[in-house]
Image 1 (tube, each protein chain N blue to C red):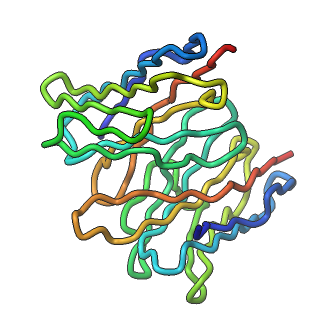
Image 2: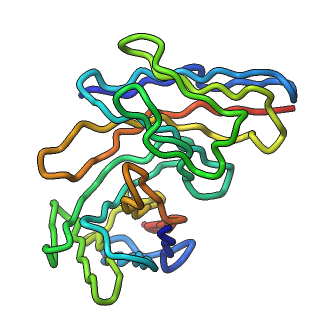
Image 3: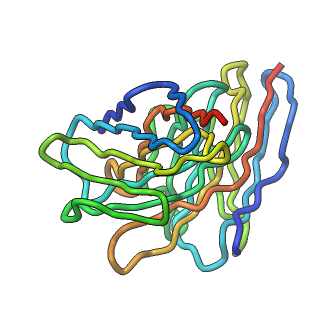
Length: 111
Length: 116
């Protein structure tokens, strides 16, 4: 089954800077990869999906890349704001309809 | 915006007791899931459900767990005899069938289970 690593447990950045989060997986390359945001005590909320044949996907200040050779996805938040502080999870479809989540990176944007 | 609704938001139970967690998925969604998250740990897959039967289940989903869709709207998770290590946040999620094959999960707010 898939194993997912996310680069760091916690990341602190200054407001206005770009946050870059990394997701690495170990087994077969999935057809698509997703990023979710989780606030404390809440369920994950879907942000972006990128397919294996897409190099990059953007949504407002968010950008996701997907490199199936490196088995890696990068998640960028540009012009970060304190409201972006949350835990960000990447997720892959493992087999059937089973989605596996990474351990998450807790982002803190400091004013 | 359609929501996945979970009840109760918090349940405290004694070890060995049965617990039922309830979920109302989004009405036109066809895939249903239960995940759990132990405090400070990652979101772990328990089970997926489609067409009134279990599609996939993880090693965590042993004989003490069961799921049911008793009517057209509810999706329940039953834990038969709770253990201390079952204390966690349990999330229900649902997804539609995507013509493109990519399923996006919508999660509920979770049910926090505390086993004493």
